[in-house]
Amino acid sequence: RIRLIISEVEGSYNYARHIQEAFLPGDLAIRECFTDSFVLFQPRDIVSGDFYLFGRREGKVTFGLADCTGHGIPAALISTIGYGILDQAVNLLQITDPSEALCYLYSGIHRFLRKDDRESGISDDMTIVLCNYDTSTRILTFSGAGNAIFHVTGGKLSGNLTGGLSEAQFR
Image 1: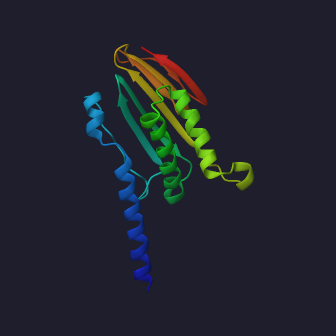
Image 2: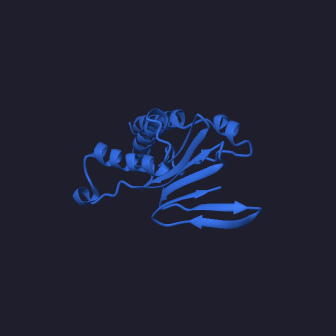
Image 3: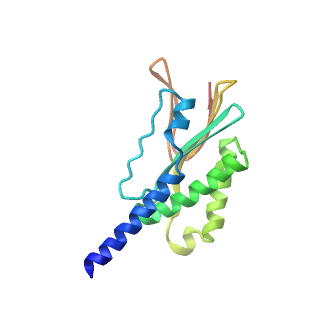
């Protein structure tokens, strides 16, 4: 009986991993835009509270990385919700401004979960960085919460943003 229960739980976890892997973008599309890039995605658990996003349209490339609060199934659920809302903002609604997309994400998560941390004592948050790169002007626009972005030129650090909500452009 215990083996059957363990097998069912493992099956559920593995199917959840399959779903998560299916919605994350393939690294081939990313390498087509950024030839020297790679994707390293190694969840701590079978499913992950992290996600990455990639989209391109009309000379603009939007990409981001998020880490949701917690681990395991709860973080994976928040990750799935966050990815869906952000993907909708970037790829369906075609929001190219990172700060606008993050505002859409924030309001969408709170609307979707229909609660806030004062009611439940649980924080449904994520740290995130979202960038938009204009291939014609070669300007990178950034917005993020809780993550840092570093600008390196000629092998030397020439600027960084850290901490809370940040926004900047780099050329």
